[in-house]
Length: 240
Image (cartoon, rainbow, N blue to C red; front, side, top):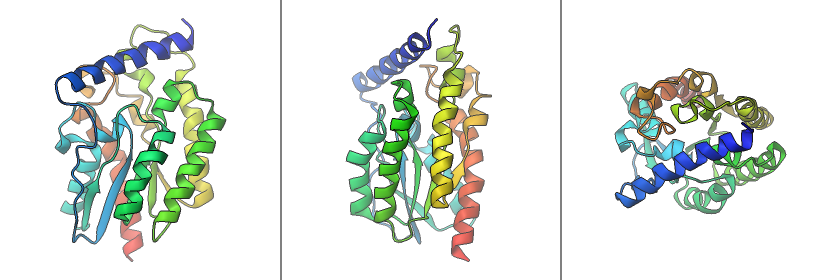
C-alpha cells in the first residue's frame, strides 16, 4: 500500500475520533482556562492534539503532568494557557496560538507541532520554513528568547490505528521532520526533548484512547518522563 494511502487511513481515523468528541461535547479545543498567576515561571504549551490531549482529562495531559511534577520538586511554575487545538498545523499555531503568547507574556514555552503537517505530506523544507517563522516570532515575544523547549514529533505509525497497514517510510518521514526540529534548536541554542524513541515502543492499546491514535493518560505519562528531566534541568540552570 502506498504511503499516501497509509497516512490517509490514519488521518481518517483521527478525524472520526475528533468528530465523536465534537458531537459529545468533548472536543479538544483550548480547555485550559487562561489564568493570572503569582508563580515565578508562567508557562504556555504550543501544539496540536498531542498537546491539548485529545480525549484525555486535563489532569492526564502531559503539560499538566509536567507542571505537577515540577511543582512537587520545588519549581514554582504554572501552566497559564494551553492554546493547542486538534488538527492544527504550524501555520495555525502561528496565526492563533502566538497571539495568546503575545498577550499573556509567559516566561517559558514548549513547542510540539508538525504531526498534522506530516500527515498531510507537507514537504520537510516547507515545514522548516514555517517552523523558522514560528520560532522567530515566538522568540521575539519572550523576555529571554532561549526559554523554549522543543519536543520532537512522535511516531504515529506505531500506533494501533496504523496496525495492519504497511507503514514503510512513515517513520523515516517523521524523522526527517524531527531533524528539522533538532537543527533549528541547535541554531538557536534551544533544548530538545526527544519523545520519538519512546513513541516507537508505544504499540499497545493501553497507551491510546479508543481511536488508537491519540495517547491515553498512560501514554502521555511515558512522554512526560522524557520531557520532565529536560525541562527540570533547563529551568534549574536558568534559576542559578
